[in-house]
Length: 96
Image (cartoon, rainbow, N blue to C red; front, side, top):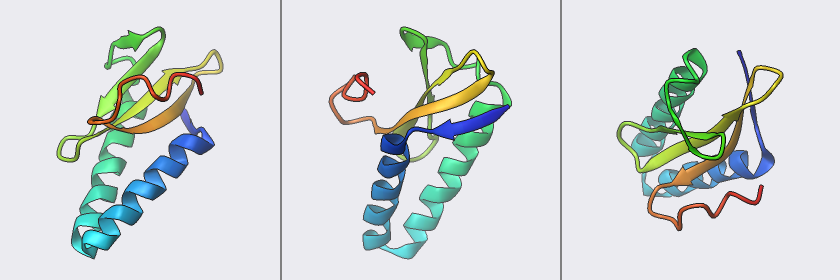
């Protein structure tokens, strides 16, 4: 299954990584590893996470307070809408 990121979602990932880089390279490396794990879980079985907002689904990171917000398109692509910090206002991404 293919995966795509909306620009806004990809930018959120980069911004989060930049913030963790400022905290120290070790934590930034752990953040990226956790993101990669979440990506693998999401793409490996995208229907595991149940729909919560229309047809959107959420794949949470195990350690960091982030989740990948995605949907499965008609073309069988996983489209990531947001790399959401879970302490943000819920649904801020819904107009994307």
